Length: 116
Length: 107
Image (cartoon, rainbow over all chains, first blue to last red; front, side, top):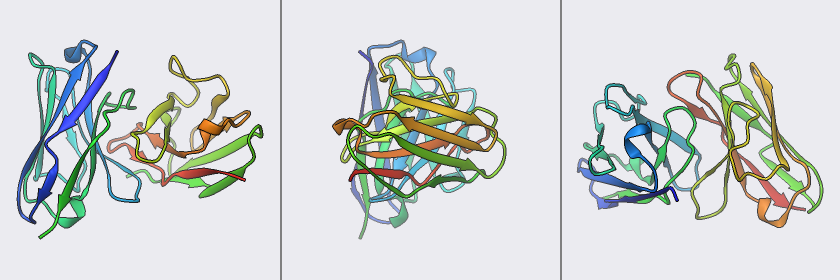
């Protein structure tokens, strides 16, 4: 059974950093593009970034470009999102998902709160 | 950036009735459209991709249609578990963008 579990969320001050992780199981992780998507409280969905199977192709949405970095470790079936220079508007639930076009399987999400 | 506009914002439907949700793209996205269902406190679930293809395990009462700029998600006979928010998403161009959602509520 395909399973994604995010971790690493929490409360951080503006300007701070967090590293999110996504542990995958039940499928061959290295064969899948992977994405990060977020949802601010009471709002819609925003696709932040995706990475190809080997990591050779990466895209970021403008709102996080230069601040967030996506990475993966295929040997550990894990996806990461390094988030720097966090702002109040980055407060959201962060989801990892399989796919780089449409998102087939989603994790349950991890909550990031940016507040002083 | 392609803007996705969903209508209506809220749809009130009785169980057993048909629901029709619309999604419009600001420019042609061919058939690069997905639909997701999200229930409160849960992650979204993929219902449709390629505008009309249902992944394995998605009930046949969910169907998608359209191409270019106009798309429709139809739920043929609403079940109690279908009351949720539905999002469309284009993946023709980066960044893939979502509509603002349509809430399907019990009438």
